[in-house]
Image (cartoon, rainbow, N blue to C red; front, side, top):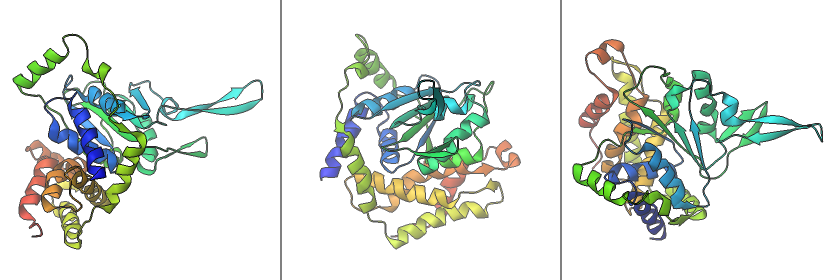
Length: 311
């Protein structure tokens, strides 16, 4: 119950600012406490940046960094650089914005592939090798990357290895007219984010992250997760199927989401709910199938229908 109270306070604080996206917010927070990272692909103005800022402000003591990705951004602008101290004649390392708790990688597909790849090691191993020296990234370290789904000019599609580093890809989408009207009312005298107070401490979030491992996953459900991901390897239209990293991500986020739901075990329904967001973006569909309208999400949904779940 202690961990459920922390999870509820965290969730309610974010929902108080980001209206109309309760399901997605819970999934994204579950992704965070599972140790993963999320890619938000959506239209401009749907609240992607506000969501990242809200999560950071909700956690007392969490550090927030924002990187605006542009074509001229260099890897050193992300990772940091050593600068010569003329007084001591020694090089002092100045860490870049990646050494933080909540990192907003805004419009990530506007940077060159060379710069995008600077995130690969950090997202997978929580470390950065700079000038031959390994620097560990402590704390929460949650990357929220955004990209606009409608803009293609001046962008660089994320490579497959980069997509595989993102635990989850989802979109917020547009909200109902009633919810949009409520947002206008709350921002009549200023942005409510300015008045948001932290609802959980830094240590409470770390405790929540540690508690994820205690959520039980039965042998049958582990086999079910593997069956879902391995099914993508037997489809002719899929050029690049899901890797074991996808299976591991699906299990961990399912455990985290179960914690938010007040359960100490994972259910098949939780796995089924998360599978499209966790598996679909990792699949590379053949050009012919893509031309005919087949998407990774449609493939995963079809696999869910055909794969019997444990009872």
